[in-house]
Image 1 (cartoon, rainbow, N blue to C red):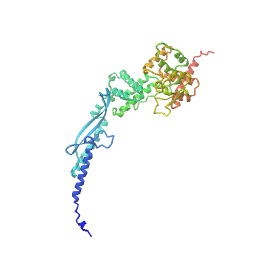
Image 2 (spheres, rainbow, N blue to C red):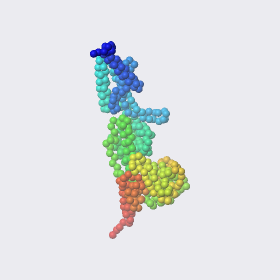
Image 3 (cartoon, rainbow, N blue to C red):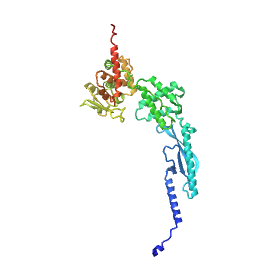
Image 4 (tube, one colour):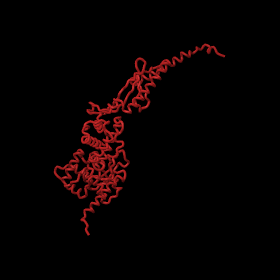
Amino acid sequence: MATLATLWQPRINTKSYLCNQRKQKEKTMVARKENQSGKVYLISKDDTDNPKLVAKILADGRESLYLDYYLGYRMVYDEAKDKEIARKERKRETLKLYLWQAPRTPAERQQNKETLELAKKIRFEREQELKEGTLGYRLKAKEINFIDFMQSFWENATKDKRMIKGAMCRFIDFLKEEYPLYATSITPRQIDKDMIEKFVEYLKSRGKGEGAHSYFCRFKKIVKNAEEKGLFKENPCKKVVFKADKNALRKEILTIEEMERLINTTYPEQNQETRRAFIFTLYTGIRFCDVKRLTFSNVDYSEKLLSFNQNKTDGSSEKSWVYIPLSDGLISLIGTGEPDEKIFKLPSQMMCLKALRHWTAKAGITKHITWHCGRHSFAVNILNNGANIKTVASLLGHSSIAMTEKYTRAVDRLKKEAINSLPELKL
């Protein structure tokens, strides 16, 4: 039985209630959209969409639909940094299609649905056209000078800068010889597989051993980065093979006798820091990039031990740290100093190389000797004197013996040359 209180409760107007609920929902939707940055929000949910479908909220209660294209990078001058930098290139296409920001009637909601479906179809078609390269502005985006891109890549590199610059200079020299019209400016779309294959042959003609292969690996790294930034439709290096015999050692080796002759050669204007550092390399096999970083904190005088983390494999190998026993002669060569003080105060690598070549010429050594020849000479000479290959691999900081085997082939060659140096046997 209904009570008096129940009978006196006001009846709820269902139509009015639903209307209020819809208005509240519309207000919430509008407030959510207006909270977007600049009253703009993405309709595309897939991050890989290019172009993306975007809506901009207008003051008249509608939303304007447009497409936002990403067209790769172009080089621009940055006054603050006083250099050219790569900047994203974008393009906007207004579709002249509109949505109701807060549809109130079934007709408005149906209109929104149909308009949105049309906009999504247009977006998909534009994406296919962009992929096929049929749009004029896509070609415009690829008109970036690849030489400028390489320069920017080198400037922003945090590791391996010397080899990256070497690869860049090799490619520019290659263009000057083989494609003089592109010597100062070449676009990514002008670089194809045939050109890369010719570049590989050019590198082989310019370099020996692993040097040419190393430059090509750095060049591929630059191209891959450009591909990721949308500058290449297809990577031109992808199907180009550079076969290199990694076990072949083609750099010159200083024999024990030549080492002694070099050490005994001095002259008044000689750079003593360069002299000390190269002798240290001949007796330890340390790379130039590691020698110039050594500080007195790397030396344990009580244990007569040198320990350091190789710059080349730092962070990429479990065997990056190297431990080398030090003789009394090496301890004397190192000397003493503050822990953070560098052991060898060397000039630039180019100046060190010039000093080394002047020194070898004074010593009457006609071989083409570079700083890395010191490392090779160390490995070959101790192997020739009977050192175990595992021991040599450990001293050189190699992650596997396979990397050290190329030195055994050089030892075999030296043995063959020694046998052939004997007078011809005639019976």
